[in-house]
Length: 257
Image (cartoon, rainbow, N blue to C red; front, top):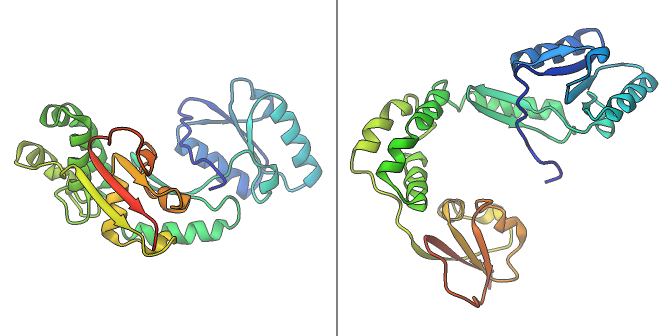
């Protein structure tokens, strides 16, 4: 991964857009769609981001230097070497946003992937997200322990679960699910012996366990590409352990024989 994906809040903020023509107008519409205020370079004070949509190479480079001097992060379409950030292809299920980026390698590929996903993600996905936000208090009351609460959500949001996000209308089931007899996925210790060091060879069950684990106990030789399939906040400990084993859902990850 060569870029850190972030969602930048620009509602009510100025965003500099330099240039004329179709491409520049598209950037202005994008800024407005996100609640930002597109402005020119003379109004750059208070802005944090800028789009430089200028055909002339020398003019674009000069504008980038000026804007960076004032501390703005700059995007220049089709010139990745000048960019502080790139703009992904966005699938909008507000407040759920799926952003697909290629690091500036191919906007066409990002668009093709977005269009493929458009047919997979239901229009009501945003309603599920809003229902989950509104239910935070009820979820804490149902599962006071954070780990138990997370495992319960993992199970419900999984494929075929009570809140499967790929099922239209899943948000309508949330209240009944919280009030019902739903239980958290069990904590405990599970062992995974890898068939290879290629993350693509993980079984679906192994990938789900890694994605839900509170702690990963792993052989030193297990590659980072496998470990990165776990949650970013999961505890990682190298075997053999020098202290007590952590609580929660623990995955013992051993390399291929």
